[in-house]
Length: 174
Image (cartoon, rainbow, N blue to C red; front, side, top):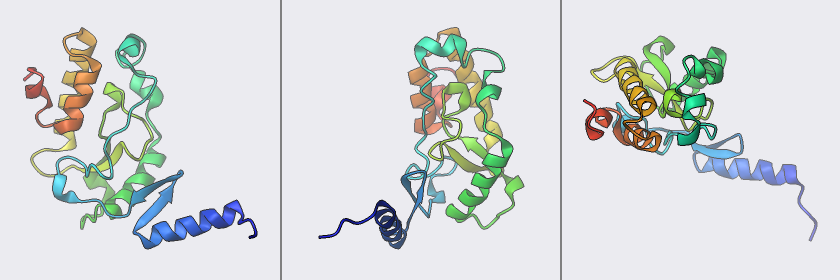
């Protein structure tokens, strides 16, 4: 039997994934449809959160607890805007105005979230009662608690990934 070329296998695999409703991006398959049912959280099958391996409990004093550190890892707006446009379609939002969404890190950079992973970035609506601005307040309080040593990095990450709207109360910080 003749050997099948790698490019043919890749093309056939991509075709099969497309037929199954999946797309290929950077070697991984992603659903073309994400549910809004989890709002104000992202759909966990699309954005479960992703970690920056450089941020651990033992490195927080040289990473997240350094003023201005997140600016050194934050992706460019050209990257996040392009991703936001794609993900607005994936979420099926009827409002497609990019200004009505923040391309947000589900696991925030301030708590060791992966800067560019599509598993960690999603178009968070700027409208409603629980918005990106509300989440920013939670992120800042959690970072302060981690840097003060009152909460471990792992506990803060778990709490915000479980439900950012209850993370502070779950950790006794509200």
